[in-house]
Image 1 (tube, rainbow, N blue to C red):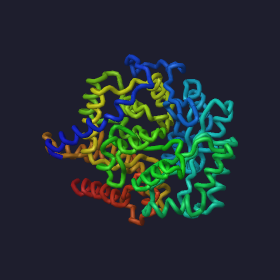
Image 2 (cartoon, rainbow, N blue to C red):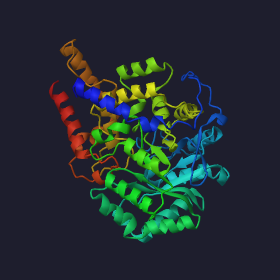
Image 3 (cartoon, rainbow, N blue to C red):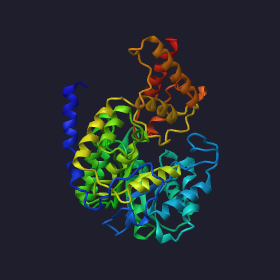
Image 4 (cartoon, one colour):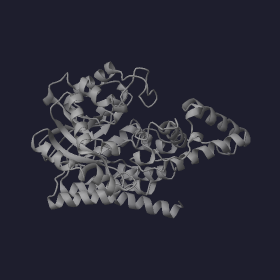
Length: 467
């Protein structure tokens, strides 16, 4: 992108924030404090939003139960055979509950099918009316599209979650699949499951019915028309929203839709927006030195994660912002960020839009590490490969010929290749991809994963051949 195009995109990005910036009425301001401080947030300071459909008073920070800690350390993404560390999950939930977090989101697909049960164990220690429980009908595979299998999935969710009702039920990842309309009809319409879910809501087994959206915008627009026509009523919708996706989701991946459009369509209808991927799969928690420097000029104490969460929580139509928090320090920081929320100012918004344009220019793989593509039938660790590649981009660790000459390049090349081998076992690296395409229909970001694997592998081979 040349300077003229950069400025054009930046100006459009700033102009595109008007919906966001005129919608900051629900949260009080607080002075910036030291992000490095070990002090905890005060539970009474947590920012809450009101669901206009039910009157639910929901914490702006929601707990996404998709990256739960395992006994061997890290998450099941790093150690897929390790059991979930239930005591650590309990401790995290205890801290969250004690500091005002009352919204917990899970799915039958999370943590290789183990998240709902672990979430149920942790939350069942509290009175049922002290938290809101959200789960999904994750009938991705065509083997689960029958009415009987989809109903059985919902019933298992209730059993694992140790409850007789769900506060928020989502049709999971609407708009995905190679033929989005055919997939949507197969999952929800041809089998009568959407009408059955409406019946469950009427019976009180579902309090709020909505969907999470990824992919084909025509499906999103169709569901909005159904809402306008009174065919179906959406109590909430889960969308991806962060300061990059606000204006650049479609530029990063032509199959995706800008968050500014999605939020705007929901907000004008009064449909609450729940937010996923405020950190864009963790990519916004780490920033290259130039971007980090500009952020610190604006607020020397704020972390990149705090900037991202403040941005995601600023629009008044956002009900809750989900974060998949594996570690206590992340939970503590996020609680502090929303206790209370400091809405993004116009000056800060303009800075973040400039940062977004620079991030887009990095050409990172738009992977959010959701793990839906796993397991790979050929053993590749797809999210870890993309994570290593993206982190090297954001931390400016890609080997390039510099003013210091060949010696600096050789050192950077060696560090990159050694780091790749440490991050990803050789039998699970990109060169083992055969292009079978098994992963493609499962990716909510609609990434051409085999093509991106080839791109990573070409880089690896080029670095090896230059040794």
